[in-house]
Length: 424
Image 1 (cartoon, helix red, strand yellow):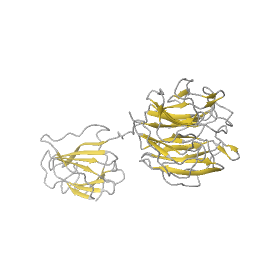
Image 2 (tube, one colour; image 1 turned 180 degrees about the vertical axis):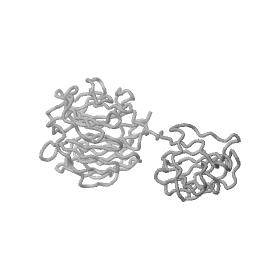
Image 3 (cartoon, helix red, strand yellow; image 1 turned 30 degrees about the vertical axis):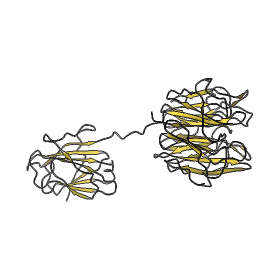
Image 4 (cartoon, helix red, strand yellow; image 1 turned 60 degrees about the vertical axis):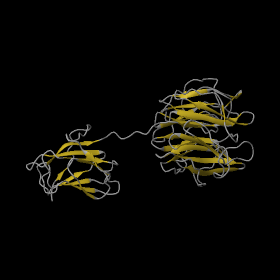
Protein backbone atom coordinates (compact mmCIF):
# COMPACT_ATOMS: atom_id res chain seq x y z
CA UNK A 1 0.00 0.00 0.00
CA UNK A 2 1.15 3.55 -0.66
CA UNK A 3 -0.13 7.10 -0.54
CA UNK A 4 -2.65 8.70 1.76
CA UNK A 5 -5.92 10.43 1.17
CA UNK A 6 -6.48 12.82 4.06
CA UNK A 7 -8.07 16.11 5.00
CA UNK A 8 -10.61 16.17 2.21
CA UNK A 9 -12.08 19.26 3.81
CA UNK A 10 -14.73 21.16 1.90
CA UNK A 11 -15.18 23.71 4.71
CA UNK A 12 -14.74 24.35 8.39
CA UNK A 13 -18.44 24.36 9.05
CA UNK A 14 -21.60 23.06 7.50
CA UNK A 15 -24.24 20.37 7.80
CA UNK A 16 -24.50 16.76 6.73
CA UNK A 17 -27.67 16.04 4.82
CA UNK A 18 -29.50 12.74 4.85
CA UNK A 19 -30.17 10.87 1.63
CA UNK A 20 -33.41 11.68 -0.16
CA UNK A 21 -34.98 8.46 0.97
CA UNK A 22 -34.00 9.02 4.60
CA UNK A 23 -31.03 7.84 6.59
CA UNK A 24 -30.99 5.52 9.59
CA UNK A 25 -28.58 6.10 12.44
CA UNK A 26 -26.97 3.10 14.11
CA UNK A 27 -25.74 2.60 17.66
CA UNK A 28 -22.39 4.06 18.72
CA UNK A 29 -19.44 2.09 17.31
CA UNK A 30 -16.64 1.36 19.81
CA UNK A 31 -15.03 -1.70 18.17
CA UNK A 32 -11.73 -1.60 16.27
CA UNK A 33 -13.50 -2.75 13.09
CA UNK A 34 -16.98 -2.28 11.68
CA UNK A 35 -18.63 -3.06 8.35
CA UNK A 36 -21.20 -0.41 7.49
CA UNK A 37 -24.29 -0.45 5.30
CA UNK A 38 -25.42 2.00 2.67
CA UNK A 39 -27.66 4.90 3.64
CA UNK A 40 -26.77 4.63 7.30
CA UNK A 41 -25.12 6.98 9.78
CA UNK A 42 -22.60 5.87 12.38
CA UNK A 43 -21.23 7.53 15.52
CA UNK A 44 -17.66 6.23 15.75
CA UNK A 45 -16.13 6.43 19.23
CA UNK A 46 -12.36 5.98 19.13
CA UNK A 47 -11.72 6.86 22.78
CA UNK A 48 -10.09 3.49 23.47
CA UNK A 49 -8.85 2.42 20.03
CA UNK A 50 -8.60 3.28 16.37
CA UNK A 51 -11.29 1.96 14.05
CA UNK A 52 -11.23 0.52 10.52
CA UNK A 53 -14.51 1.12 8.72
CA UNK A 54 -15.27 -1.27 5.85
CA UNK A 55 -17.63 0.17 3.24
CA UNK A 56 -20.32 -1.87 1.43
CA UNK A 57 -18.95 -4.25 -1.19
CA UNK A 58 -21.69 -3.68 -3.82
CA UNK A 59 -23.01 -0.14 -3.48
CA UNK A 60 -25.32 1.56 -5.93
CA UNK A 61 -24.85 5.04 -7.38
CA UNK A 62 -26.06 7.57 -4.82
CA UNK A 63 -25.58 5.32 -1.82
CA UNK A 64 -24.44 7.32 1.17
CA UNK A 65 -22.57 6.65 4.43
CA UNK A 66 -22.05 9.18 7.21
CA UNK A 67 -19.44 8.82 9.97
CA UNK A 68 -19.15 11.21 12.93
CA UNK A 69 -16.45 11.63 15.58
CA UNK A 70 -18.58 10.70 18.60
CA UNK A 71 -16.10 11.68 21.36
CA UNK A 72 -13.82 14.11 19.49
CA UNK A 73 -10.98 11.60 19.61
CA UNK A 74 -10.18 10.88 15.97
CA UNK A 75 -7.03 12.99 16.33
CA UNK A 76 -5.79 10.47 18.92
CA UNK A 77 -7.18 7.27 17.39
CA UNK A 78 -7.93 7.69 13.70
CA UNK A 79 -10.62 6.18 11.49
CA UNK A 80 -9.31 4.24 8.49
CA UNK A 81 -11.58 3.63 5.49
CA UNK A 82 -11.47 0.24 3.75
CA UNK A 83 -13.35 0.80 0.47
CA UNK A 84 -13.83 -2.95 0.12
CA UNK A 85 -12.74 -3.38 -3.51
CA UNK A 86 -14.13 -0.10 -4.82
CA UNK A 87 -12.25 3.09 -5.62
CA UNK A 88 -12.19 5.98 -3.19
CA UNK A 89 -12.01 9.36 -4.89
CA UNK A 90 -10.59 7.74 -8.06
CA UNK A 91 -7.90 5.89 -6.08
CA UNK A 92 -7.96 2.12 -5.89
CA UNK A 93 -8.49 0.13 -2.72
CA UNK A 94 -4.74 -0.22 -2.09
CA UNK A 95 -4.53 3.40 -0.97
CA UNK A 96 -4.76 4.28 2.71
CA UNK A 97 -7.61 6.57 3.64
CA UNK A 98 -7.34 7.97 7.16
CA UNK A 99 -9.44 10.55 8.94
CA UNK A 100 -7.63 11.92 11.97
CA UNK A 101 -9.07 15.33 12.83
CA UNK A 102 -10.82 16.05 16.12
CA UNK A 103 -14.56 16.56 15.70
CA UNK A 104 -14.60 15.39 12.10
CA UNK A 105 -17.70 14.33 10.20
CA UNK A 106 -17.63 12.42 6.88
CA UNK A 107 -20.44 12.24 4.34
CA UNK A 108 -19.38 9.96 1.48
CA UNK A 109 -21.46 9.08 -1.60
CA UNK A 110 -20.90 6.33 -4.17
CA UNK A 111 -20.55 7.83 -7.66
CA UNK A 112 -20.14 4.64 -9.66
CA UNK A 113 -17.29 2.37 -10.72
CA UNK A 114 -15.14 5.10 -12.30
CA UNK A 115 -14.39 7.24 -9.24
CA UNK A 116 -16.03 5.14 -6.55
CA UNK A 117 -16.77 6.73 -3.19
CA UNK A 118 -16.48 10.53 -3.07
CA UNK A 119 -16.67 12.73 0.03
CA UNK A 120 -19.67 15.00 -0.29
CA UNK A 121 -18.44 16.78 2.81
CA UNK A 122 -15.58 16.23 5.20
CA UNK A 123 -15.90 18.78 7.97
CA UNK A 124 -14.11 19.35 11.26
CA UNK A 125 -16.46 20.75 13.85
CA UNK A 126 -14.40 23.30 15.76
CA UNK A 127 -17.25 24.32 18.02
CA UNK A 128 -15.97 22.70 21.20
CA UNK A 129 -18.59 23.08 23.96
CA UNK A 130 -17.89 25.89 26.39
CA UNK A 131 -18.50 25.16 30.06
CA UNK A 132 -21.16 27.33 31.72
CA UNK A 133 -19.92 30.02 34.05
CA UNK A 134 -20.88 30.87 37.62
CA UNK A 135 -23.57 33.54 37.67
CA UNK A 136 -24.31 34.11 41.35
CA UNK A 137 -22.48 34.45 44.64
CA UNK A 138 -23.11 33.95 48.32
CA UNK A 139 -21.58 35.50 51.45
CA UNK A 140 -22.11 33.58 54.67
CA UNK A 141 -21.29 33.51 58.37
CA UNK A 142 -18.90 35.91 60.07
CA UNK A 143 -18.26 37.80 63.28
CA UNK A 144 -20.15 40.74 64.72
CA UNK A 145 -19.68 40.74 68.48
CA UNK A 146 -20.03 36.96 68.20
CA UNK A 147 -20.10 34.36 65.44
CA UNK A 148 -23.24 34.60 63.27
CA UNK A 149 -25.04 32.32 60.83
CA UNK A 150 -26.48 34.80 58.34
CA UNK A 151 -25.98 34.64 54.58
CA UNK A 152 -26.51 37.06 51.69
CA UNK A 153 -27.06 36.05 48.07
CA UNK A 154 -25.48 37.99 45.19
CA UNK A 155 -27.46 38.18 41.94
CA UNK A 156 -26.14 38.17 38.37
CA UNK A 157 -25.70 41.95 38.48
CA UNK A 158 -23.72 41.94 41.72
CA UNK A 159 -26.56 43.18 43.95
CA UNK A 160 -26.34 41.76 47.47
CA UNK A 161 -29.65 40.66 49.01
CA UNK A 162 -30.92 40.96 52.57
CA UNK A 163 -29.85 38.59 55.33
CA UNK A 164 -31.02 34.98 55.39
CA UNK A 165 -30.60 32.98 58.59
CA UNK A 166 -28.46 29.89 58.10
CA UNK A 167 -29.17 26.55 59.71
CA UNK A 168 -27.20 24.81 62.44
CA UNK A 169 -23.86 26.11 63.76
CA UNK A 170 -22.87 29.76 63.53
CA UNK A 171 -19.33 30.26 62.32
CA UNK A 172 -16.47 32.63 61.56
CA UNK A 173 -12.91 32.40 60.21
CA UNK A 174 -14.04 29.72 57.75
CA UNK A 175 -13.55 29.29 53.99
CA UNK A 176 -15.82 28.79 51.00
CA UNK A 177 -15.54 27.59 47.42
CA UNK A 178 -17.54 26.60 44.40
CA UNK A 179 -17.83 22.83 43.79
CA UNK A 180 -19.78 20.50 41.50
CA UNK A 181 -20.01 23.15 38.80
CA UNK A 182 -22.94 25.13 40.19
CA UNK A 183 -22.88 24.61 43.96
CA UNK A 184 -20.83 25.89 46.90
CA UNK A 185 -19.33 24.63 50.14
CA UNK A 186 -18.29 26.32 53.39
CA UNK A 187 -16.05 24.45 55.82
CA UNK A 188 -13.89 24.66 58.96
CA UNK A 189 -13.76 27.85 61.05
CA UNK A 190 -14.89 28.34 64.63
CA UNK A 191 -17.60 29.83 66.80
CA UNK A 192 -15.26 30.39 69.72
CA UNK A 193 -12.75 27.85 71.00
CA UNK A 194 -11.94 25.20 69.86
CA UNK A 195 -12.01 25.32 66.05
CA UNK A 196 -14.51 23.36 63.90
CA UNK A 197 -14.31 20.70 61.23
CA UNK A 198 -17.86 21.00 59.93
CA UNK A 199 -18.85 21.61 56.31
CA UNK A 200 -22.07 23.00 54.88
CA UNK A 201 -23.16 22.45 51.28
CA UNK A 202 -24.96 25.13 49.28
CA UNK A 203 -27.30 23.99 46.50
CA UNK A 204 -27.60 25.65 43.11
CA UNK A 205 -30.40 27.85 44.44
CA UNK A 206 -28.15 29.28 47.17
CA UNK A 207 -29.72 27.41 50.09
CA UNK A 208 -27.24 26.39 52.81
CA UNK A 209 -27.71 22.87 54.16
CA UNK A 210 -27.13 21.35 57.56
CA UNK A 211 -23.78 20.72 59.21
CA UNK A 212 -21.71 17.75 58.07
CA UNK A 213 -19.10 16.81 60.68
CA UNK A 214 -15.77 15.02 60.57
CA UNK A 215 -14.05 16.62 57.60
CA UNK A 216 -10.38 16.60 58.61
CA UNK A 217 -8.34 18.37 61.26
CA UNK A 218 -10.22 21.12 63.10
CA UNK A 219 -8.91 24.57 62.23
CA UNK A 220 -9.83 28.13 61.36
CA UNK A 221 -8.30 30.83 59.13
CA UNK A 222 -7.95 28.47 56.16
CA UNK A 223 -8.82 29.19 52.52
CA UNK A 224 -10.39 27.30 49.63
CA UNK A 225 -10.34 27.32 45.83
CA UNK A 226 -11.92 25.25 43.08
CA UNK A 227 -9.82 23.38 40.51
CA UNK A 228 -10.01 21.03 37.52
CA UNK A 229 -12.81 20.53 35.02
CA UNK A 230 -15.09 18.26 37.05
CA UNK A 231 -16.11 20.51 39.93
CA UNK A 232 -13.55 19.77 42.65
CA UNK A 233 -12.20 22.11 45.32
CA UNK A 234 -9.50 22.15 47.98
CA UNK A 235 -9.33 23.69 51.46
CA UNK A 236 -5.83 24.44 52.75
CA UNK A 237 -3.80 25.94 55.59
CA UNK A 238 -5.26 27.35 58.81
CA UNK A 239 -4.65 27.40 62.55
CA UNK A 240 -5.88 25.64 65.68
CA UNK A 241 -4.12 27.41 68.51
CA UNK A 242 -1.23 27.18 68.87
CA UNK A 243 -0.54 25.21 65.66
CA UNK A 244 -0.31 26.66 62.15
CA UNK A 245 -1.06 24.10 59.45
CA UNK A 246 0.04 23.45 55.89
CA UNK A 247 -2.39 20.60 55.31
CA UNK A 248 -5.17 20.46 52.72
CA UNK A 249 -8.45 18.64 52.14
CA UNK A 250 -9.85 18.01 48.68
CA UNK A 251 -13.57 18.22 47.94
CA UNK A 252 -15.12 15.88 45.36
CA UNK A 253 -17.57 16.98 42.67
CA UNK A 254 -20.36 15.72 44.96
CA UNK A 255 -19.20 17.81 47.94
CA UNK A 256 -17.46 15.11 49.98
CA UNK A 257 -14.48 16.46 51.93
CA UNK A 258 -11.49 14.09 51.95
CA UNK A 259 -9.03 13.35 54.72
CA UNK A 260 -5.96 15.50 55.36
CA UNK A 261 -3.06 15.79 52.94
CA UNK A 262 0.11 17.21 54.48
CA UNK A 263 3.06 19.15 53.16
CA UNK A 264 1.58 21.90 50.99
CA UNK A 265 3.90 24.85 51.58
CA UNK A 266 4.45 27.23 54.48
CA UNK A 267 2.01 26.78 57.36
CA UNK A 268 -0.11 29.91 57.78
CA UNK A 269 -3.60 31.35 58.24
CA UNK A 270 -5.75 34.32 57.12
CA UNK A 271 -4.56 34.10 53.51
CA UNK A 272 -6.38 34.62 50.22
CA UNK A 273 -7.23 32.36 47.29
CA UNK A 274 -8.56 32.71 43.74
CA UNK A 275 -9.03 30.71 40.56
CA UNK A 276 -7.09 31.56 37.39
CA UNK A 277 -6.44 30.11 33.94
CA UNK A 278 -8.36 26.97 33.02
CA UNK A 279 -9.09 24.92 36.16
CA UNK A 280 -6.19 26.32 38.19
CA UNK A 281 -6.02 28.05 41.55
CA UNK A 282 -3.62 29.94 43.78
CA UNK A 283 -3.23 30.59 47.53
CA UNK A 284 -1.30 33.70 48.59
CA UNK A 285 -0.21 35.84 51.53
CA UNK A 286 -1.23 35.15 55.15
CA UNK A 287 0.40 35.14 58.54
CA UNK A 288 2.74 32.52 60.05
CA UNK A 289 3.99 32.12 63.59
CA UNK A 290 6.80 34.53 62.62
CA UNK A 291 4.63 37.17 60.93
CA UNK A 292 3.08 38.15 57.60
CA UNK A 293 4.29 36.62 54.34
CA UNK A 294 4.10 37.48 50.66
CA UNK A 295 4.46 33.99 49.24
CA UNK A 296 2.04 32.02 47.03
CA UNK A 297 1.25 28.43 46.10
CA UNK A 298 -0.38 27.38 42.84
CA UNK A 299 -2.95 24.57 42.56
CA UNK A 300 -2.93 22.43 39.42
CA UNK A 301 -5.91 20.81 37.68
CA UNK A 302 -5.51 17.72 39.88
CA UNK A 303 -5.65 19.71 43.11
CA UNK A 304 -1.95 19.36 43.89
CA UNK A 305 -0.58 22.39 45.73
CA UNK A 306 2.87 23.50 44.59
CA UNK A 307 5.80 24.69 46.67
CA UNK A 308 6.17 28.29 47.82
CA UNK A 309 6.86 31.17 45.44
CA UNK A 310 8.10 34.34 47.15
CA UNK A 311 7.96 38.04 46.33
CA UNK A 312 4.33 38.65 45.37
CA UNK A 313 3.57 42.13 46.75
CA UNK A 314 2.99 43.50 50.24
CA UNK A 315 3.06 40.85 52.97
CA UNK A 316 -0.30 40.91 54.72
CA UNK A 317 -3.08 38.94 56.37
CA UNK A 318 -6.87 38.95 56.46
CA UNK A 319 -7.45 39.38 52.71
CA UNK A 320 -9.43 37.51 50.09
CA UNK A 321 -9.31 36.87 46.35
CA UNK A 322 -11.77 36.43 43.50
CA UNK A 323 -11.65 35.55 39.82
CA UNK A 324 -12.51 37.97 37.02
CA UNK A 325 -12.44 38.12 33.23
CA UNK A 326 -12.92 34.37 32.88
CA UNK A 327 -9.30 33.41 33.51
CA UNK A 328 -7.68 35.89 35.91
CA UNK A 329 -7.90 36.78 39.60
CA UNK A 330 -7.33 39.56 42.08
CA UNK A 331 -6.37 39.80 45.77
CA UNK A 332 -7.53 42.82 47.75
CA UNK A 333 -7.51 44.58 51.12
CA UNK A 334 -6.08 43.42 54.49
CA UNK A 335 -3.12 44.78 56.40
CA UNK A 336 -0.12 43.97 58.53
CA UNK A 337 -2.28 43.16 61.57
CA UNK A 338 -5.86 43.00 62.77
CA UNK A 339 -5.69 46.74 63.50
CA UNK A 340 -3.85 47.80 60.33
CA UNK A 341 -6.34 48.14 57.50
CA UNK A 342 -5.37 48.26 53.83
CA UNK A 343 -6.76 48.82 50.34
CA UNK A 344 -3.95 47.33 48.29
CA UNK A 345 -4.77 45.00 45.36
CA UNK A 346 -2.72 42.50 43.38
CA UNK A 347 -3.92 41.06 40.09
CA UNK A 348 -3.23 37.47 39.03
CA UNK A 349 -2.59 36.73 35.34
CA UNK A 350 -4.05 33.77 33.47
CA UNK A 351 -0.74 31.98 34.05
CA UNK A 352 -0.79 32.55 37.82
CA UNK A 353 1.71 35.41 38.01
CA UNK A 354 0.85 37.82 40.82
CA UNK A 355 1.50 41.46 39.92
CA UNK A 356 2.99 44.10 42.17
CA UNK A 357 0.74 46.22 44.34
CA UNK A 358 -1.77 48.01 42.15
CA UNK A 359 -5.02 49.91 42.51
CA UNK A 360 -6.01 51.10 45.97
CA UNK A 361 -9.72 50.52 46.12
CA UNK A 362 -12.44 51.81 48.42
CA UNK A 363 -12.56 51.85 52.20
CA UNK A 364 -9.69 50.30 54.10
CA UNK A 365 -10.61 47.02 55.73
CA UNK A 366 -9.47 43.67 57.09
CA UNK A 367 -10.98 40.15 57.07
CA UNK A 368 -13.29 40.83 54.12
CA UNK A 369 -15.05 38.27 51.87
CA UNK A 370 -15.15 37.77 48.09
CA UNK A 371 -17.38 35.97 45.58
CA UNK A 372 -17.74 35.74 41.78
CA UNK A 373 -20.89 36.74 39.88
CA UNK A 374 -22.16 37.37 36.36
CA UNK A 375 -19.86 34.86 34.65
CA UNK A 376 -16.75 37.04 34.62
CA UNK A 377 -16.94 39.52 37.50
CA UNK A 378 -16.32 39.51 41.24
CA UNK A 379 -17.29 41.35 44.38
CA UNK A 380 -15.58 42.10 47.70
CA UNK A 381 -17.78 42.78 50.74
CA UNK A 382 -17.87 43.21 54.52
CA UNK A 383 -14.83 43.19 56.78
CA UNK A 384 -13.50 45.21 59.68
CA UNK A 385 -12.66 48.86 59.12
CA UNK A 386 -11.07 51.53 61.27
CA UNK A 387 -14.52 52.33 62.68
CA UNK A 388 -15.59 48.74 63.27
CA UNK A 389 -17.51 46.13 61.25
CA UNK A 390 -18.62 47.30 57.80
CA UNK A 391 -21.38 46.26 55.39
CA UNK A 392 -20.17 47.88 52.17
CA UNK A 393 -19.13 46.15 48.93
CA UNK A 394 -16.97 46.78 45.86
CA UNK A 395 -17.55 45.13 42.49
CA UNK A 396 -14.68 43.92 40.30
CA UNK A 397 -15.18 44.39 36.55
CA UNK A 398 -14.20 41.82 33.93
CA UNK A 399 -11.09 43.96 33.38
CA UNK A 400 -10.07 43.70 37.04
CA UNK A 401 -11.06 47.24 38.06
CA UNK A 402 -12.35 47.51 41.62
CA UNK A 403 -15.30 49.93 41.83
CA UNK A 404 -16.08 52.44 44.53
CA UNK A 405 -17.94 51.53 47.72
CA UNK A 406 -21.61 50.52 47.77
CA UNK A 407 -23.16 50.60 51.25
CA UNK A 408 -26.06 48.81 52.93
CA UNK A 409 -25.54 45.16 52.04
CA UNK A 410 -26.70 43.21 55.09
CA UNK A 411 -25.27 42.65 58.55
CA UNK A 412 -21.91 44.34 59.09
CA UNK A 413 -19.41 41.65 59.94
CA UNK A 414 -15.93 40.25 59.36
CA UNK A 415 -14.26 36.81 59.02
CA UNK A 416 -17.04 35.28 56.92
CA UNK A 417 -16.58 33.60 53.53
CA UNK A 418 -17.84 33.91 49.99
CA UNK A 419 -18.32 31.51 47.09
CA UNK A 420 -19.97 31.26 43.69
CA UNK A 421 -22.95 29.11 42.69
CA UNK A 422 -25.57 28.74 39.97
CA UNK A 423 -25.45 28.72 36.17
CA UNK A 424 -28.60 30.83 35.70
